Amino acid sequence: MDLTTIFQNTQKASRALAILSADRINAILIDLARAAVANAPMLIAENEKDLARMDSSDPKFDRLKLSESRISDIAKDIENVARLDSPLGRLLLEKELANGLNLKKVSVPLGVVGVIYEARPNVTFDVFALCLKTGNASVLKGGSDASYSNEAIIALIHDVLKKHGVDVNSATLLPSDRKATEALLTAIEYVDVIIPRGSQQLINFVRQNAKVPVIETGAGIVHTYVDANASLEKGRAIINNSKTRRVSVCNSLDCLLVNQNQLVNLRQLVAPLVESNVQLFADARSHAVLKGSYPQELLSEAREEHFGTEFLDYKMAIKTVDSLDEALDHIAGHSSKHSEAIISEDEQNIERFLNSVDAAAVYANSSTAFTDGAQFGLGAEIGISTQKLHARGPMGLEELTSYKWIVRGNGQVRPA
Image (cartoon, rainbow, N blue to C red; front, top):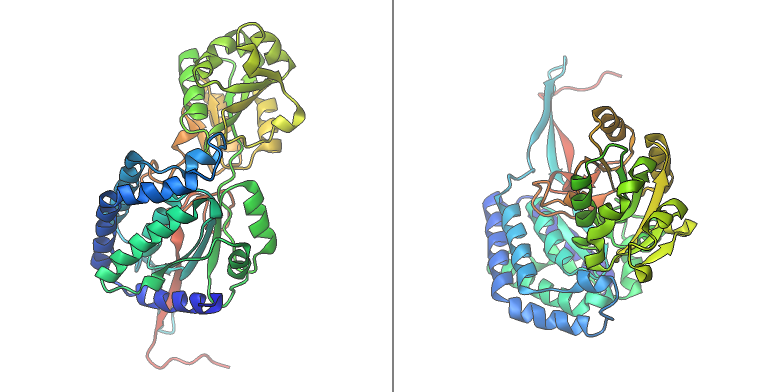
C-alpha cells in the first residue's frame, strides 16, 4: 500500500474516533493494558532482536530495552490514562451576542497526530493511548533500531482494536525508512500536527523539513544550580538522583552549577556519583577541588563544548559561578528550556530563579527527574514540549486537543 493511501485511511479513521464514546475508549485501553502484560514474553523476545543489533554501551540501549517490569509500568500508565476524565466536549466558553447568536467554544481532537521517534518502543504504547483517549488517530514513525519491537506492539494494538470493532487505521505504524519520514513531514492534506521525540538532531531535521505544523519535544540540556547556602544533604540526594536515576532520558542532569562558596562541599556533593561511575568534566576551579578525591579516571577538565551538551550518558559537566546572576546568565546561554533547578535555602533567591529562568519546568530543591507526564498526574505523556505555542512541558490529554466554535442562530444575517 502506498503512503498516500495509508494517510488517507488514517484520516478517515480519525473522523470515526472523534465520535467514539468515552466508555468504548476506556474499555479498549484497559484491554490493551492487560494484553501488554499477557504478551510480555512475546514483546520481550521481539525487543531482544532489536537489542542484539545495538551496542550495549550505546546510551540508546537503555531506552530501547523492554523488560517485564517496564511492560508492567507501561500497562499501569495505560490504565491511568483510561481512568482520567475525557478532555473532549468540554465547554470552554459560552456567550450570547446582542443579535441573539449563541456561541460555544468546545474542546475537540486535533485530528491526525504524527509522531517521529527513535529507539523507544514504549512511545508506541504511550502515543496510541493518549491519542485514542483524545479522539485522535496516530501515525507512528519509529526508528529502525526498534523495528521488531514496534511491529509487535502495533500488531497487539490492532488485535485489541479489532476486538472492539474499531478501525485499525486509527493507529498506523509507518515503515522505518527515510522515505516514510519525508512523506509524513509533507502530508499536509492528511496530518494535522507532527511531534518529534528524540535527539536534537532529529528535532532539528523535523523542524527544518516539515510542512506540517510541528510541536518540538525532547531535547533536554538540564542544569542544577547549588546556591551559596544550599543544604548539603538535599544537594547530594538531588544531584545523584537527577543524574543517575536514568541517564538516557531528557530530564537527566547535564550541568551542575556550583556557587563558589559551595566549593568546600563539592567533594561531598558529587561523592554519590562515584558509585555509578559518572564521568565529570569540571572547570578549572572545581577540577582543582576534586583532583585527588574523585577517581582520576572519571575526572577531566571541561572544554567549552561540554557546556550546552545533552549527554544522555553517565557524564556531567561542572561549572563554578560567583553568584546567582552568573548562574542565570549561564542557563540562559546554554539551556534547551526543558528543566532547570535550584538548590537553596534562600527564599528570595529561589523566587528569583523560578521567575527568571525560561524553561518548561523549573524546580526548587527537587530532582529534575520529575519532569514526566505520569509524575505530573497526566497519565502518560506524548512528549515534553520545549516551545511556547500551544503546549509547554509534559504533554498529556489536554495538550492533544484543540477547540471549535459552535454557533446557533435563528435566521440571523450580517448587515452589509
